Structure formats: structure tokens, C-alpha cells
Amino acid sequence: MPTNRIDHRFAALKAENRAGFVAYIMAGDPDLATALDILKGLPAAGADIIELGLPFSDPMAEGPTIQRASQRALANGVKTRAVLDMVRAFREQDIETPVILMGYLNPILSYGFDRFAHDAAEAGVDGLIVVDCPPEEADSLVDALDAYGLSLIRLATPTTDDVRLAVVVRRTSGFVYYVSVAGVTGVKSAEASDVAPAVARVKAASGLPVAVGFGIRTPAQAAAVARVADAAVVGSALVDEIEAAARLNENVTEKVLSKASELAKAVRSARLETA
Image 1 (cartoon, rainbow, N blue to C red):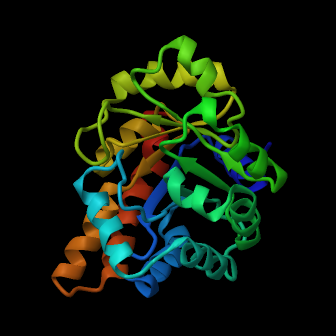
Image 2: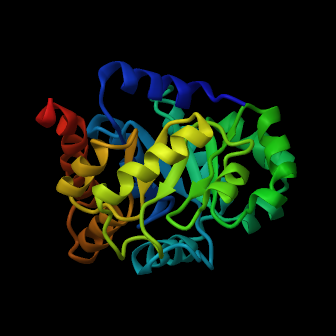
């Protein structure tokens, strides 16, 4: 089922002939109030789409950076309802920027699929990335999300062959998230020369925009990916900025939004540089 904010944003990006910048932060890191300030500031810093992490005790796809962020959020007592409240507060000032929740199945299963979909839609969420929910076991979740106009956004990887890709993109909407490297977040670097043919293959199979993440940390890397994909996703680099600023007792919000702005500018200008 199409999701209006996601579809509208990618249509606008296509009309502008540029890629989108997708910014990831963990809800409740370093604390709920600061995370909300960052969330509210990301659109002005250049984020076209926001991924908001759902804290979970066993984030198997994440590298050390986001694992620590999840642990900090859990230590702050941040649970699913508090994350939805963050989105609700964000929507009081921004009704256009798509917000995607990224997390793992267990908290959503515990919450209840239908109840979660209802509450997430009411809060202003646009879609979910559920890292450990295989397509073969996702129909009940997708049914619940479809009923409330939410997208389930799936992951494709360098090891996803054509047969598996057809399964992965079934009942996917919004966009497909291409994991540019084999492994966890924040460890390896994406190579645009490898990403370009993979993006073309995923787009052909899905008919959807493709956002690329898991290996993008610098403005140069973000720009390189932005030349070949519909969006570039940056998470660990922003979460690192949060962690470092908090440790040094600096203004966390200012530091991370400044970093986001650097990355967004690189993404926005990437195709102009080659025009």
C-alpha cells in the first residue's frame, strides 16, 4: 500500500533530479529530550527522510556504535510507547517529512501488530524497517500495516540473488533499503562502483526507489552514493557524533545537526557536480 509522505517525497526528489538524504538516530539517545530536539532539527539540517531507531536489547544487524546507542536508550527507560510519543511531538511542527521506524520484531510482536500499526499511524509514522522479519513470516504484520496505510520497507543485500530478490520485494512499499556491504552497520564502507549495478537490479525488481545505507560515513561517500541511488542513508556517523558530544559535555543537538547538514549538502549537490 502506498504511503503518501514517502511517495510524495521521492516524487519531489525525482522532480529536482537529486537523491534524498536519510538521517538515522536512535530514539532516546542520549536522552529523550535531546533526541527529540535532534529529531525536530533534522529537516532544517537537510534530512529528506528520517529513520528513528526503536531501542532493542539484541540489535543483530548493528555495529558497536548503534548497539551502544540502543543500550543507552534502554538504560533511559525508553520503550516503544515513548518512541511513538516522540513522533507525535515531532508531528506538531512537521507534517511533511517521512518518518520510518527501524528496529526488530520482538518489541512490535509484544505490542501487538494491529495495536502497533494503529498507534504508529496515529502518531504520524509512515513506515517500518523490521530487520529480522523474513518475508515468509511477514504477512500478518503487513496486513496490519496496510490497514493503516503504513509501509513495510525491506532490506536487500549484496548476497540477495534474483530469486530471493523477487521474494524480498513482495508486498514492499515506499522504497527498498539496499544494504551496501555484507556485515553490520558502521563498520565497512560503501563503494559506489559496486552499488550502482545493485541499485539498478533492485529497482527493476521492485519498481520502487532504492535507498542505500550501512556503509556511508563521510560527505564524500554520501555524495558518491547519491549519484547512483535514490537516497543515501547515514546512521552510525550521526550516532557517533551524539556519543562524542555527550562524552565531552558539548551541545549534542548542535553537533549532530551540524554533521547532518554537512552530509545533506553533499547529497544535494552530488549530481550537480557531474552535470
